[in-house]
Image 1 (cartoon, rainbow, N blue to C red):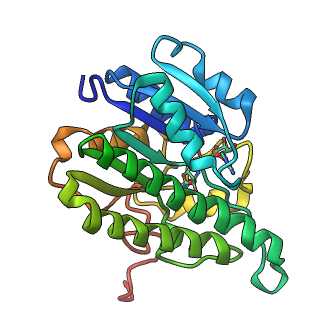
Image 2: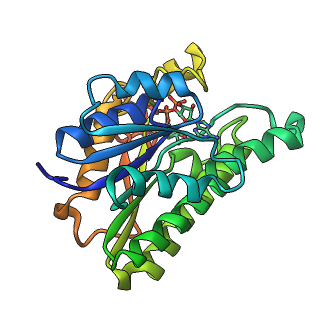
Length: 256
Ligand SMILES: NC(=O)c1ccc[n+]([C@@H]2O[C@H](COP(=O)([O-])OP(=O)(O)OC[C@H]3O[C@@H](n4cnc5c(N)ncnc54)[C@H](O)[C@@H]3O)[C@@H](O)[C@H]2O)c1
């Protein structure tokens, strides 16, 4: 039990990766506050975890949400030791057609909300006497652009930067911050992916498949465990080598 007794908040817990993180956390002995704007999806994740989890329905974009989430964890478990900023949107729109409203929605959900929640959770962790872990879910799209992802890429690049700021400012309180960057993961009900996009990414992946949500959940458990006690400010990529290079290129020297 690597997270025995830890009190965790997982945002986007009604989604594919968030649900896997919640299940893995409970299996490792943590108690989890399942946060999502979609009440039914969060309730679905709760099934089977009732003895160790509670649902808190909240929209990360609304004012006061961050403090409300930290208070929900305090009311349910007495405090917060782990925050997983996992909720995120990834709509895809060509840059020249990208409306202000969509840009703002993505930045509010993927960057402003997670920043405010990290700040509120960090304050609570310090007030508790220090110690804790904050994981921000980033993306390879934050390191390399792709068509239609200007807002998403900007939000994830900036969130990785927030991770580094959290690490250097909160380290002296014993609080670590880690970015976890999943590879292509299928199944989102909110941000569906086209078959062509999925096929192309898998074709270029050295391990030849998409990520399973459980692959990422295992890395998040590790990042939050004492095994990762000296890891802070860095990015753990769970992408099957997808960002390591161009696996689908042929060898360059002509072969007879
Ligand atoms: N799926 C992938 O291929 C992939 C790759 C790299 C990074 N990521 C990142 O991993 C995280 C999880 O992705 P996923 O595939 O599980 O997505 P998902 O769409 O299955 O889940 C995201 C969840 O966040 C919730 N959410 C959205 N906006 C919210 C808001 N304003 N307030 C509260 N909850 C909100 C949604 O209701 C949903 O349940 C995201 O941050 C995503 O950007 C995903």
